[in-house]
Image 1 (cartoon, rainbow, N blue to C red):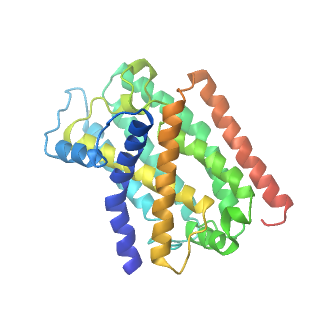
Image 2 (cartoon, one colour; image 1 turned 180 degrees about the vertical axis):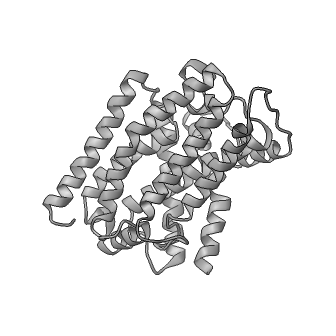
Length: 306
């Protein structure tokens, strides 16, 4: 029960703080004062106190989209171990349910964007669907690398196996999984080099253009869901790179938070020194990520660990 409360506390306090940390890294890298660490909390609180504005062309799908997206992301977050190797909702096959819930959250956001009838939001939804379809093979190949040694398609079983074998230190194939997963993470979160979350040019926007017409609590739900997605995916990245102690909750918590801070630094650093790719190059980037993950699966099979 203590682990469940710790898991829930991390999901409440961690996502928006981690998103603020990414902003702080970018500000420091650019030698700017930047927004404070807790700025995402202030933004969400301000939006929750405002009223929502709805176009006369929208239907209940527009209202339901942010709620469904947040609910699906929160449910998926309960399947990924955070401080330790046991998740509150752990069962064989949970990796497939996890991927499905993330896809459903994305679909709900896309559907609410299409419901506005806006050409710009439809363009963003189209790009989101195309890039997600190219990125998801990399995700499943990475999850295959993580779960094959344990013999069960479950996060808890896989991470317990990784912690027992020493993780990346003793299994270099996880480096291939981490590289492919990093590409998926940047794509799923619409970060540079796939998309620029700070752009104001609608012709180049993907995620941000889909939420242009949302306001008030609806926009707050989308921001919370996005931050929770960042938090959960970065937790998976930490488990791939660092063996989290299974029987030491405090040590596991320290490893998780330190690893997520490192991933926040990675995202902020990438966005500080690189520019977004041309849309025609994004497909090559994502296919390359899938190829790297496929090589990892092949090495795993040839090594007899699958």
